[in-house]
Structure formats: C-alpha cells, structure tokens
Image (cartoon, rainbow, N blue to C red; front, side):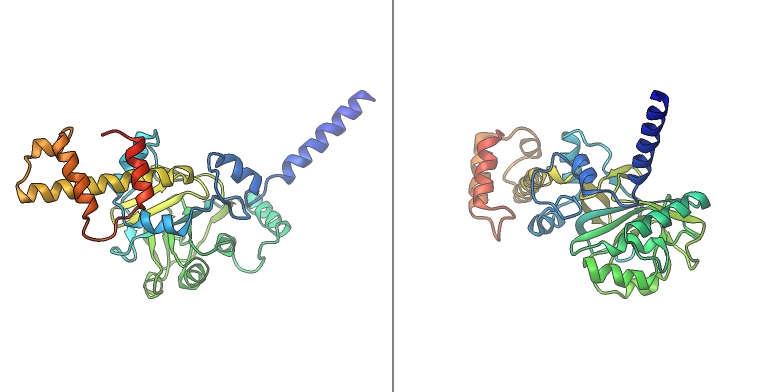
Length: 310
C-alpha cells in the first residue's frame, strides 16, 4: 500500500511539473528572477521602469553606460554588429523576450497545445504570441539563433502590429522579411542580423519572458535596452536609475573637460588625472551656469555629490 501511495504521489507531482511548463513565464517567476527591483511592476511581473528614465537613457552614450555596468560586475550586457533599419534613430524601452529554436515536431505540438491552454491565439503562427502581449514602451527582443533564410520572425504586417502596441520596434538575433515595408512604418525600428524574402520555416517559439541570450549578452524580461547604431546594451532594471545618474555625470564631466581643453585653460594631464581643487570649483561653477537644462534634478545632483567623493 505504501508503494502505491508513493507511486501516486510521484505521478501527481510529475503532472504538476508538466502543468507548470508554460510558454509564457508566470508573474511569480519573473518577480523571482528580477527580485532586486523594488519598484512598480506590470501585471505580468516585469519591472516597470518609468518613461522619464527611458527618455534620459536614450540621450546617453553606449560606452558610458557600458563602463558603469562593468563596474557593477555586469560584463555580458552588450551586443554589436547589427543591421539597422534606421541607423540614426536610437531606441529605448522595456524588454519582452522570446526564445526560438529549430523545429522539433513533438515539442512544437506541445507548445501549441499549451498555448491554447494559456488562451493564446490559435490562428496564424506562434511568432505572433509575443506581439500579442506588448504594451506601450516595450521592445520585442528575440533569440532567433542567427537564422536568416527561413528565419524571418516578422514581416511588415506583424511590424505594424508591434508598433501599434509598443510604439517601439524589435531587436532580433535573427532576421525579418519585407524590410522595405518595415522601413515605411513611421517610428518603427529594428536591430536585426539580416533580412530575407523567405517565410519563417523549420523553427518554433519555445518560451516568452524567460532569460535569453542575444549574442554576447544575457537578457531578462523587464531589462531596459539602449539601442543605437553602435550596438545594444541591456541594463538590469534595478540598476538603471543609479547608473543613469552616474553616466549623466560622467558625460557632463567629459563635456566640461573637452570645453576647457579647447579653450586652452587646462592641460590634458590635468583633465585626465585626479582633478585639483581649482578644477573642481570651476566645474561646480560651470554646472551652475550650464547652457541649457541639466538632465537630472537639483536634488539628484546634490545627492550625487553628497554620496560620492571626487
């Protein structure tokens, strides 16, 4: 009798495990893997970094934020060597991830059945499922394992749907079709590894909002991405605001230093080494008379100098 009870318990536990293998991650799972984020979240569990922060991030350089991330121990957040639909239009947003793999019929059948249980659309391909959950400010980031021919994750129809929901674009470690049509969607942009006229074939969606690899970078749902013609940087949500202020100050220091060097006021060695008290005082006066609006608030600026030394 004891063996029967144990066997039944194991069987029941296995059913629970199978039932837990969703296509889309649960809010509980997303909260667990992004547990250091303490702010507001979307209903799906993803961190909800503010729109204001996203706009400030867009104005920064990749290298500045990359350096700040490395100082925090995050060495695997950048991917370059992209083909861009609109090279001179940067993009920031909150990540929705999708994982694609080469087609395996038995697993693909399970994915479709599980998707039906999750209430996902049964008409069209599964590559529309990540698009269905996008909201304003999201960027659809997909690992298409670099497949170009027959690896086109979207065309201009899905591209229009993406933009209508997110007001953003895509980052695909893979390809698209109808690039000419995609380029005509005003406001839409794409960082892709290539384009091809073929349709998506012999590949399948396996998960939504799980950790994925994009080339050299590891990406989590809810990450903030800075995408420019020089590459893409994926920033953990819990670090964004801290790194944003650090990066903004770094760029202000650079702007001040470059200006003073052009004016011949200081020598390169004075700017490139630890600043003297005279340069520090000059920089503070320069900030007080900054020609334009500083990217941060006066309170943020005061806190920065209060918590950091030179």
